[in-house]
Length: 373
Figure 1 (cartoon, rainbow, N blue to C red):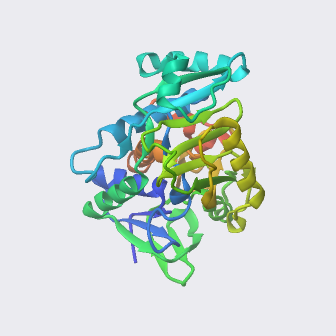
Figure 2: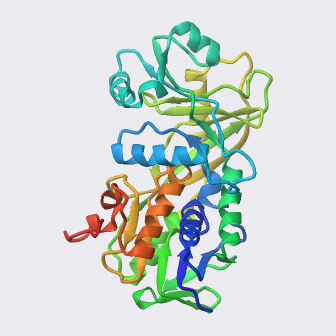
Figure 3: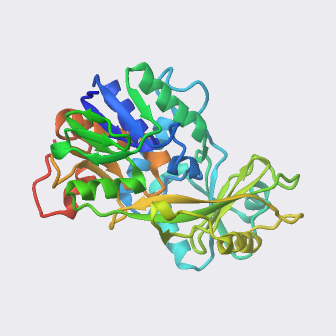
């Protein structure tokens, strides 16, 4: 089998890159993944929250681009809305370092954010403990319709001619990125390989000779049982001073204590202690008439670069290999710009995006000129 471009990974990064390539007219694009269906690994474990305010200005700008795409995707891209703009409520303790930080950060958002007086905070989010709390609401943000987004990327990519080889693991990248060898012995020959396999990408890259190092981390999420005490229109609540978030899900709440522990992908499993921690933090930050009861609990995986920025562009060591990874939990929000920048490098050998140089893998290797036009 031959393909011009082989995308390793059928999660959100691989799907968005394949779609961006095909949309630009690329042909003979093949996506390979060990899973039987697309978007069922790290992508499916994500909380799917649209939150554009970030401490890193580069990530924030990409988040804004991704949010614009989610609000107004191309015609015929999706058959239903991709965003439930239920609102994002950032809560912090008055007088805390978090309050000072977010007051400065949110100033960049202008009319997109407003501070809520106590009465409005109580009306919009009556389940939030408000003792000495300060709340900032971004009404245009909220919950991403993850299943709709994944399905739209897959359908649009297939319509444009992208092929999928699913249910088989990639064992190795061929020299100079001239294809991949699959675990069943088959070889797919090509001109370049795109590493979009998240936490599983580094092992493949290292065997091919790359120096890029990424750190997979584990984050636990909990969905509680459906309760009449939960209003499905409540906003997403996020605290950074005592990291925690909660949003309505399936009649209950999805909550997380925002833990982040290094983990090997093959050893990913949920820790009971983190379930108890999430429940304790829910009691600390929320007040409901009834007791929350766990319904579903799992560990997701997020992959980071050392500087916490995305890794998108040609590998500095391995010819023919292009990265789209280290999305660090922001992949659902930033899928479209990440895939678009990766497609630029693949199609043109350069990217005109103003942030492309900040994301280039060469920053982890010897200093060199990055071709950004």
